[in-house]
Length: 455
Image (tube, rainbow, N blue to C red; front, side, top):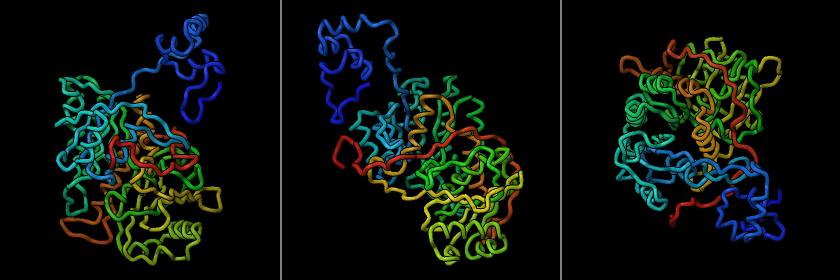
């Protein structure tokens, strides 16, 4: 098939048969057809055999966006929702949006001035309540999907370091509409499900009870990789570490979700987590020294980046999350700078560790900055009604994060070497069947947001 000119102009009709024009744009109307080729062109069209043309695509799924805060270009709502509205960068090219953002709800409405401005420019209504956003002002569910982005805003942090974001609060109101309407649609929840395990488990259980696809998590597991590889299903992983920024609840979740994206592909599949422990400060390196498998993997990361031996150990202010799985597999997430997010795995039968890094995280000020694969998989779920990966992974990453945050505290007292917490509630089993999902190809160009107004 001939290609459309790069400048976007229409191909000349004398060099493009009418059939090829239809194949380039199957949405030509009778009136447009007469304009292209006159009555002769229309006669040529009607002479083709039935079924020779693709059917017009179905209407785009309508999405309700429910955000905690949209007041800055650094906010996750601005990163994610603009791509759902205007398209994103995938496999080295711009991809137009395949969903329609039909409504927006802003929990911290008065300070979400940027979100209000985008909505006005794009002609998207902003509703005062979650229920109104998902019913489009009516009495029953009126959208085909829900996107919850409750990651930023002016919310308190508790004693343990939990950022008390209203993910469950918003999700719960969505569930009420689902139950009243006796119908449910796919839901995306940015980052972990909740800072509270009981809330998170309830959120997951409701997705199974009401039979709707659920996804979410970190955008890092699907970011560009070096090298561009994915572990095979049933890889015989013995030990794993992830090195990256782990300074707070959000950071540790990113690193834990990266870890889960790899270790769930181990031989036999995911078996669940037996225990979680947090160690903070200089005691982190004492633990590494007494566990040679972790030291070996950490030094392999330093070597791959041409860093001096003991590079990471020079940082006294660090932290780690230790995870023991039910099948005996062990893993650690270790705070370390300068390597992006890097996975290192000891794999049976291989002399050297397998090292895969997610590097070059772009800033939030461009339309196609870092978060492109995530909007792609949000869109895929909304279109196909299928989870892009097992939602159990999202629940498991959430649970590990919750227990990590609890480990250093007992009876209101903090200790740097946290308790080893037995985690029978994380005894979830599943086997991943997904293929590679990370961004590949040419990285996106730097371009301003397609806002419809000057920023």
